Image (cartoon, rainbow, N blue to C red; front, side, top):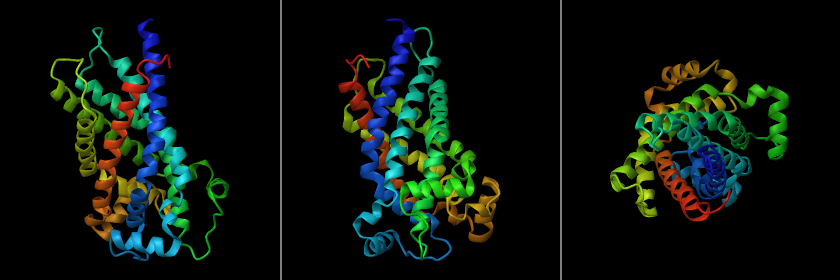
Length: 294
């Protein structure tokens, strides 16, 4: 088998394993993401006093499964997002490898950056926008959307394709830097554990710990961008001309603290998400797809 064939199969395996990982991950993490989004968007009516208050009021009004409102689009999106992320990462790391099969840490960082940008354009921006608009529609006295398909149809009819690509520049920046940091830290920590022995397999619990550290680092860096992205994609997105206009309005009207709204629950969600994602993905690649032709 030629190096090109091996690289192509690694990309395909990465995309398939990533898709499965994304589907399993969202089933666990969606309620946390739902509450985080509600807190970040809670500006105009101030409905929630805290994270617990948001959970309590949502369940009281919509039942337990109200915490899963809009999940269907995110489930589809998560499969596409994680598949494109890991498929792209495997593609770029293969392209950046030296002749001896090694890859520099700079190129590992760049592979993560490009993988994040790829998932932002392919899946994250349109699907996150739709999810946010469906969640925000819950707050209307008379919701406009009668379900996922009707919501997508309504958004496209009213705003066109641009309506689901609101905040794309902020999303590319956020996802690109997120994945650059995560892959770089994950690879660095695994290299520190394994030393120069490439045959060492890092135990899955330790992969989870490395994932928590990698996730925490991205939260500390990117929460302001996440808040801006959420505002750009919400139901009042038409108020903002672009990403900078949105950031300026938040600072002007709410102060710097508003850029860190929802940071506590986002820290919990992201750390769990990154740990689970890497653990599931690496388990699939190591124990399921390693000996398959795929």
